[in-house]
Image 1 (cartoon, rainbow over the protein chains, first blue to last red):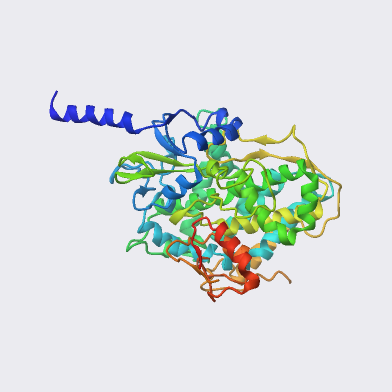
Image 2: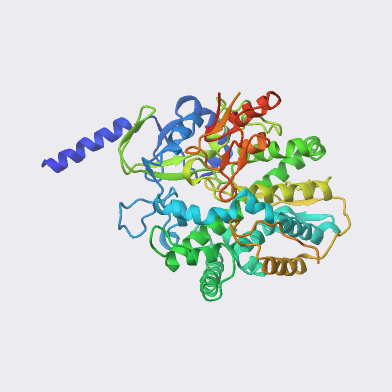
Length: 462
Length: 63
């Protein structure tokens, strides 16, 4: 045996020694979805950091404290997805790693500082609480129109008719894209999350994605030639650590913003409405006491349902944290979802308490990669929820028609959530007309300017 | 009681301003928090504690 071989042997023996305790949990299996609470409790008790031997092997962090101590260590963690293998070959934030045509860099979420920091600084002024404040009348109006489309019938699908549409239209508005094109994006973005590549439906999803991709590239070029305010304008003009991002890099950032903006808020809204239908007394209380309960209830739904269940990282240098010996190149999963159920931090963790205090949940992540759209998500969710409470207060979801994602290891989402309610009166124009009007408002008032340029609240009156 | 936000730790989760809107302000450009006045009125102490307890980054410090 030559020296190199003996060193490899030693490494293997060392790996087996340090990769303990070991678990075997396929996050994409139905076991993860169906036994989530039992598994969380078991892991918190005996292995808050464990070596998960599925998907090539990776560290799995479920404990709240352990996750807190790890997630903020940007000095020893990397988000980099080195698709071409020109740096250290790291595989980004997805575990298992994407294959085939899904192998592209997911914007600044798959970058490290300093590039990541330049992107955040450029885009934050479009998505900050002050920026979102200006958009609220628009979000309210789109929500109103979605509900008006269904209010007279007494039937709605909360996913298809509301929670898919409002975040999609708003995200396009923030980007500076034509609002009427929301349906070019809506189906492929949701379907790419819940349709595996070996599904018979994948071919159709792929076609929709191609159409969407072409539309995105045309829009990027269109805005480059004829500037209009919004996130895309920022991306085609900004300098990132001394360079101008090329079209492929901008494409990845756009997919991150669109993917992050659509599917997660939909998932949160659908699950919350489903729970409120099952708990009509709590729904009544939330509606009545919304002044004091809406914030805490929103955080509690975020904690309990954790739309983005976790994120992957790569260890970028050997280190020992809380006794676990990590080696450079090891993969790591930060389970925001399981940490959110840790009984050491959250009393009665598997129950929703609308007035929960000290709710230090991790649903938007921790550290420098905190969800950049968290303020948009909260505002959109609260507006959709309160309008449903006001206009469809007795809604009943149909459990037979509710469809949850088969696999919840990445996004804890829903495909459909039909409900019935006592019909009511329309309040205004339908969705298409409203979207056309909101387009004029966006254009005339330049709503998609960053908050550093424009701070006024949208005015809807003619 | 005094309150301050450690700007190296704050990542703009905004939960402190939700718990105690009178004690915290959020920067326009990125929503990161700061305490315009570090002195906490007695009537606001409970809210200050709730802000500290709910900060996911543990950036809110009381003394």
